Length: 257
Ligand code: MF3
Ligand code: CO
Image (cartoon, rainbow, N blue to C red; front, side):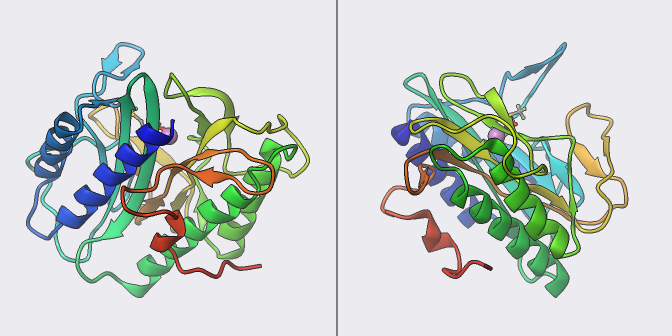
């Protein structure tokens, strides 16, 4: 799991560094596919089935009001002021690593910067709760509290998940709920925590491509995800790129109380 997490994070980091105005999401996805080949790993998105639909791209690339599961396409050209969620999910030696980050394309509006910051903060606040003998609801409540107190809207149609040899394992990890409820965590469990947050309305609809979830009000949406291992005192974030020893390198150290 640690190796898969490291590779997933390294690829995510490389892709985020490529993002520039004028690029298409197809180009980013192609680079994702090449990196996966270089690392000797497989995409866990490409070929993913939902009913009769099969996900077509290596990564999920969701721009602005696209919430999750966007497909890399040639027509989608990034421009200054956009945001893009880059979701990299791979299988390495039988195990899954899954992580996502929403990043600015050039300079973005300050309220959108705030949306990104609050969403990432809520992820880290959730991770702090993923310890032995806590419950799923402790993670959910921590995420929900931070998002709602910031005036943003939690998307409830999608949830985090257990992870291991399969991408989506039990338990579900919702981004809303009550502390003290739900399944108890045990040391060694692997989970993906992934808050998805809209600017104002939580309502989403499906795009005509059958995969991309869209914020109905057209406002930007953010998504941050790590794969973590539950432990006694502190969860271990395993989606940390090669050469880093700590995911917090990506994050302003102080968390809100
Ligand atoms: N990180 C996403 C998730 O946990 C990856 C989805 S793969 C897709 O759901 F094929 F469904 F897009
Ligand atoms: Co996930």
